[in-house]
Image (cartoon, rainbow, N blue to C red; front, side, top):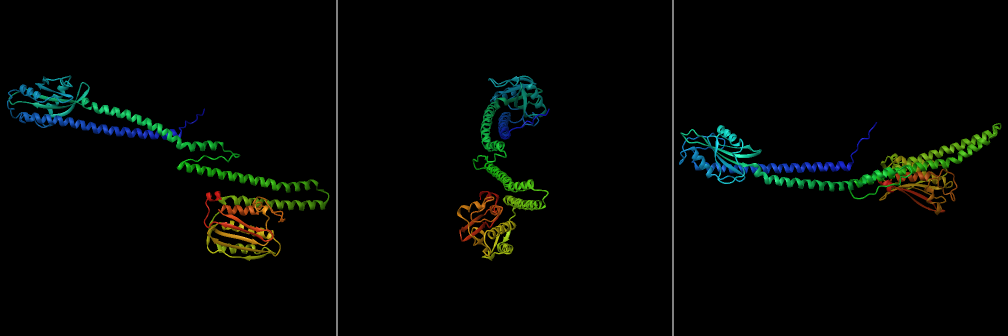
Length: 488
């Protein structure tokens, strides 16, 4: 049995990443602050213990104690003391118990003197005093940390001795780290709750913000699910001015291009079906009625069928040209010399017989167009002018460059185009039948218009009955972008 892969929504993944980074950042910040404050507190405790050591040294004239870490010695008898017991008692009396700690005097390895006031800890508990005594015996005066009843105590151990006495004394001053770190731990606890609150707030805000930022993506998914071949008019609402709104506009433009392509395909299918239906019916009808035993009827039917098939072939070719012209990717704009382009087109059309061809003004300069497509459109305009005008009609080919771009025109002195047909002639299979009874597919001007629009240009028509017509292709001097062509 196949199990569907568990998918984590993008919104959840974004929020998880934000929370992970925020949590790690808060933990690192709190940890660094704790370590720095802990070090400061321990350094303060050591400073207190060193100050006590200085006081003890001054009291007994420095004869029996050394700095922390040195070995103990009793090279001279402290003044006023005739026994180690008295010396230890005096030192315990002299040094008050530190805050959060206590002192202890030991004689002969056993606790002998304690402070005469209540203290936070009892240094004689457990094996603390024995353990510190062993360390001091080996190392002399020492400041270190030792366990007392499950908590850590920072201590000062000062060996005390008198020459001639076999009894050894020891002074211990200890400060409970738990007592001194209580405030710090309380602050860290408050910090932890505050950090948790910050994480919750970041999670709520991140959830809302991520949801709003990803709403165009959800709209895109919903819209894409609704789009079918018959419903390409769907568009995603655009809001904001950021990368996602740009993505939404790009997707909408893509859908618009798909819609145009689909509609173009549908129009081509409809055109083929509409225009080929009549010749197919004609051919079929004659084939059904032909008398196979009559050679003349067979020959007549054969000629008619071939004529209709030729007409269908020409129509299919025209439809193919129109489809190709409407496809923007089929155009390859390049820098072209307008003079050379104009003279090349004139050289092609001047051989059309029974017309008075003239070369008008010629543009000077370069423009960016697809020369093959523009030549095709220009020749088509010239062919239309020749087709719909009488023999000997004057037809002019010319071009110019101005602020709007390249202008390419065909000017004839034919019958002109009536007002009601000036829009229809650019439609597929549209003809100005009232004034121009010439036969044709009706796709020529549609092809021209498709080519010009693919270049981001337009067609201007100046015509009047009895005066003739002037078709002008207005093309931008630089290549049109896809957005420009869609807008036009």
